[in-house]
Image 1 (spheres, rainbow, N blue to C red):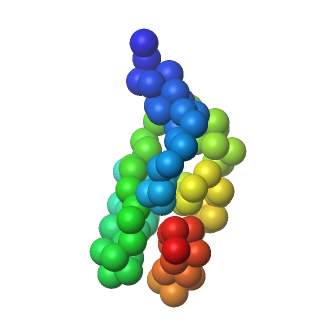
Image 2 (tube, rainbow, N blue to C red; image 1 turned 180 degrees about the vertical axis):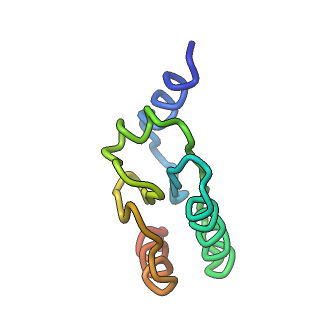
Length: 101
């Protein structure tokens, strides 16, 4: 089974009862991609959010998620930004809104 198949299967599983926020940072490893991942981890820690930050470097996974520009950020399956870094206050708001009450 390929890495891509494992990745797709992991994200397509129905997650009943899973209250953790899923944050995907998509990018090949460029400085902006690494910075976005760092920003997400810092924001999750700052907010004390129940979230999992996953770095995705598989180019085929980018296409599966409709991403054509990197870095890209997907929170709970919703593409929030691609091709640029979000403003920290905006990132905080997205994570706060996605986190369970």
